[in-house]
Image (cartoon, rainbow, N blue to C red):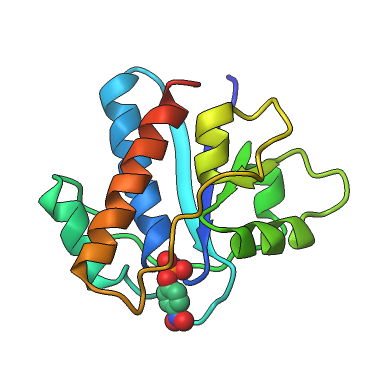
Length: 162
Ligand code: 4NP
């Protein structure tokens, strides 16, 4: 049996943006392709929050939109991920730099900025130019709402390409 298509979402802490991206992408794919199997996950470039649940503000904005991300647990990106995932997508340019620095030689994973890959697909070469999904950690509810909207839009656009 062929492996399910797999996507790993990356941010700095894996408690605000990438858990939302994981939950929203899984929800969008279940709606669009109920018969297809995907592997969707998220991780952080740092390990400060390893083992923790997502930030309560991300849990809340997801819940307001009918998505439960409360069971997710934070983990750090590792080199093994480059052999497990087809796509590894950063929320901002710093995330993407760290992803690309960690990528082992010969890695088959396609890396890119989430919004750019959603817009342009993952066969082209503009996967690094696009809008960044801003870190809401020091922000308020409006920042988490904005992150949710950006993540939702990018997830819908990426699903169009699968
Ligand atoms: P995230 O947000 O990268 O979207 O999960 C952050 C979460 C925690 C920290 C920074 C950003 N932190 O410094 O602890």
